[in-house]
Length: 321
Image (cartoon, one colour):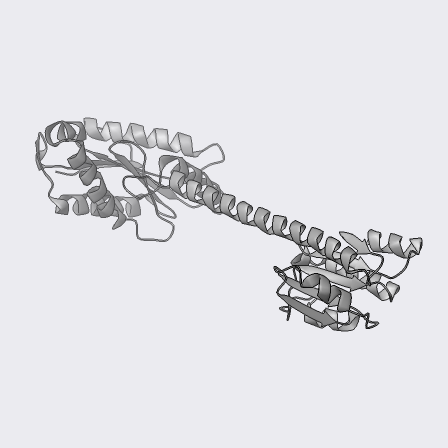
């Protein structure tokens, strides 16, 4: 730990040195005047401090200036967790009151008493260690929460967005499209006869297929704003911002092409390879639209695609064969 001693009157520091000889955790002591403290500690300044102490000892022999410096330290965000102790060789109640008003942890009335100095510093060290420990725990909790959030945002099997996070991001994109009055498009990709594939080859092979198809779909989601998610066992969604029906149709065709290139063998009524059905829609959202509604709509469109319908002009469906 670092201890800064701020003293304008050259107080005898021998008792302090004797007390510090018994406190091993304080490894560095920096002495400075009240004026020097503003530069060395960069008090209320964006500059980087020359030294950033864990504990500050400040003399109130020059009490007006010391009062102002202490208040400045306590109001500086850099020193929120710094422990400040004041000292003054006096029983003057006004000075003691001033030291207390600045928010100091404690004060020393007799700076020649090494026992008192030791006791106050031990208290300060214990508090500072507790603060450091608490901050460390808070950072660990924050990091763990971030990791948990990342896990919940990502589908564990495929490494693309989860349905929950996709819905959250879709709400944001709908709001943005409403503000800008721009078209958005949404594709839903369902693997054809995937249940039969699992039954024939086993779930481990099915998981491999899901990962391969996810990788293939990423090739069609190259723009920064594109969002790709797994929204069901064998279902994926691809959001395309600022994209009209023609653009969505082009992307849907590339999706089919990339899946066909995988050539995953599986005999079905559609052919010898595992394929996908792609349902798509393009819309300029209104204030009544939300993510849940659009996802339900795209599910209906994909069902129509499977049944060979979907004839409305702002819908389309493409089948991979």
